Amino acid sequence: MSKYESLAKEILANVGGKENINSLTHCVTRLRFRLKDESKANDYALKNNPGVVTVMKSAGQYQVVIGNHVPLVYADVCELAGISNDKPQEEVAPQGAFNKLIDIISGCFQPILGPLCAAGIIKGLNALLVFILGTSFNNSGTYMVLNAIGDSIFNFLPIILGYTAAKKFNVNVVVGMIIGATLCYPTIQTDTLSAAGKAIGTLPMIGDYYTKFIGIPFVSGNYTSTVVPVICIVALAAQIQKLAKKYVPEMLQNFFVPFFVLIISLPIGLLVIGPVVSLLTSILSNIFAGLYAFSPLVTALVVGAFWQCLVIFGLHWALVPMAMVNIGNLGYDTILPGMLGTTFAATGVVAAMYLKLKDKNKKALAIPAVISAFCGVTEPAIYGFLLPEKTPFVFSCIGGAVGGAIMGAVAVKQYVIGGLGIFGVVSYISPKGDATGMVVSLIAGAVSLVVGFVLTMLFYKKEETVVENKEVKVEEETVLSPIKGEVKAIEESSDAAFASGALGKGVVILPQEGKVYAPVTGTVTVLFPSLHAIGITSDAGVELLVHVGINTVQLNGEGYTAHIKQGDRVNQGQLLLDFDMAKIQEAGYSLETPVLVTNYADLKEIKNTSESSVKAQESLIEVKY
Image 1 (cartoon, rainbow, N blue to C red):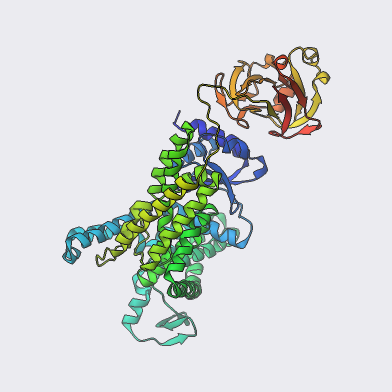
Image 2: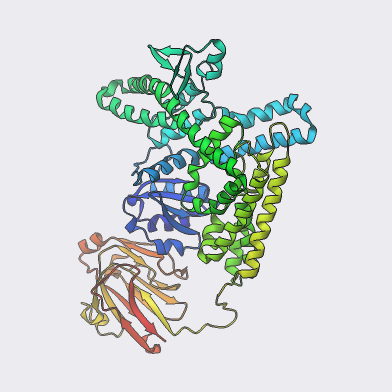
């Protein structure tokens, strides 16, 4: 059993099971599900699982935030659900054009984000060595090798994005890579063609052309290091592939489908899509450049203030490609430097919260969140600490804005898409070895951290009940329904023992779904070997019995699957048991499920719901002590 298999089972069960999953991917900290029916997911159970930071719904995705170890959890979920990374998964497109755009960009970039940052760090370190050792280092073999390692992913980015875009659009991945490689082919680049001869004509707004393809003017471009053209061409290739598979005989599809995809998509891409997309991205780049020229300080301040908000909704993916366009066109970017302070501000805020928190469990979770934020991954801090408490999130935004303002005031430029957090400071060293930007980024990061820390220490107050060697008296408690179904009085039970009330006070549920969730937070005191009955004692002291079916002890566990064992501590809403309704009924047993308070004599009052039916996790019984 792997380290995260138990967590993976809980996640899989609470997203509605493998049959409810259309597709699954992951990013740095989140599992990103596309579910057939989101209403089948148990948000409450997932959010209260100690292995889950929180649950988010954005851009048509059901996102389960895990933390930095998400790849390991993802692998276990894939194995349990029978999901293969190599097999295209059925996709359900998110609703809305903007959501679709963000989904496409994030889907293409998420698989390469780690290697992309690693390559950026290597380029930054090379620039740092130039700063330390002098410009003569530029001519050394060491510089050449490090530069080749760091530069390769950026120079041949269309090939790599051709692969990820092909997986996103369910195109043959080698075809996607060929599309990217064609965009990188030396002889079709503008620099090569312009050096070979004079322009033979000009297309309005698009530019000069130096040659023709079957009589059509071919406006070339420098597509190495570009982002958008290859994604657009692969999207076109996906449509052509569908048509080719429809009309090409199956026995010939192996080579004729790729043939038609390439011979149609690439000429259209090079003649139309490439030039038009390049024009549009240049316009957007100029707009950002105009805003920056108007006020570098205000632009960077706004980016720093709202970056964490963009991250929450996944909208930061809209700015990353623009930054890469700037680096490709200008050699530097002025958009992303504004977000430098956000990771350090989050670090300072959570560090201050750690000092002020009294809950030992929460304090223990704060330490890895601080380390993660300092290294540039802020989701554990955001979802585990900042957003739930609200005011700390505001403090982190203020700290990020201050850091952004400092970066903008000095007009710091970013030369590579590099590491995050503390590893990102080398991204601000110019290729010539000017480290002014790195020094400013360190100052901006330090100031952001201090601002976040001080604001939190001064103004954050956590109201929490600390249980320390004494019991907290609870006067009443709500028992939630463990099962979805029709509710009847316990006196209507077909079993005389239950109907008499001798075994406890409560209700009978006629199940409409084969799942049992924890009605309270507490401890599993009894789990019968036949798995048909579970006893739970809440933290406040109410003792409950959930008995699935009448006389079902005789099934000896057939048709039941337990997700817990006796002695386990469970959270309210956690999945405890699956049961096969059809199998139980086919065996001739009633599904009637008594839910009883067994220590009713020790309680002041027990009040059952007046509803005739309940959903799982709706109020079922009110108890007063």
